[in-house]
Image 1: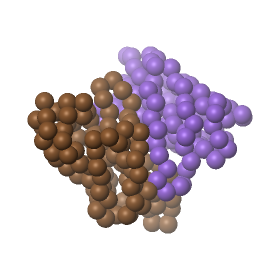
Image 2 (image 1 turned 90 degrees about the vertical axis):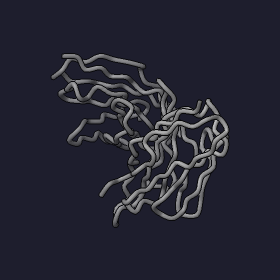
Image 3 (image 1 turned 90 degrees about the horizontal axis):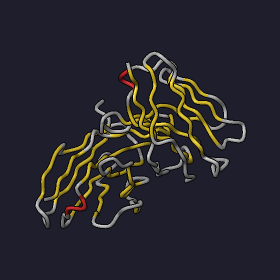
Image 4 (image 1 turned 120 degrees about the vertical axis):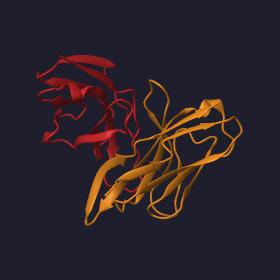
Length: 116
Length: 112
């Protein structure tokens, strides 16, 4: 049981390049989230998916797109990376496990992205 | 989700109890108080949550005032490994897609 797995762990992009951050959870959770954390700041919600097939904008969605590929996977895409998107990106999931509604969220270890 | 207010930083002596306050004066009746911590830029880790009764688990205790406008997270015997940023969050529990909105948190430094 790996929990929430993010790939890659580190990435350097040039301005204008695109990339997709991958996130997968093995806890059968319905809801998944993408956050970014800038140095010395708290986490800010980019997008979330309440359940498979649905996605909604969070606090800072501009410059990002997401795909809830299936119940396990939730990807975040940067179409044209900008230096302002240099940050640490965290994926999280929450929801039912078995017959119990686990209300806490579980986080991945983050993807450290630098855009030069 | 209701907003929370926490002190930006606090120090604590190793082996002593650490009491972390949180103000959430606009909390709604169906919102829970959650605490998470983030150690050295790792992913945040769930600690505890509660609605109106005091809660305790193996990591910490949560004391919520009777009017639910504030709460205190207690780490009973702080260790150096408890040095982290602690986030107090209020949210509706159990609803699909209910969001976690993070504030600035309290940076706790446990000193030998």
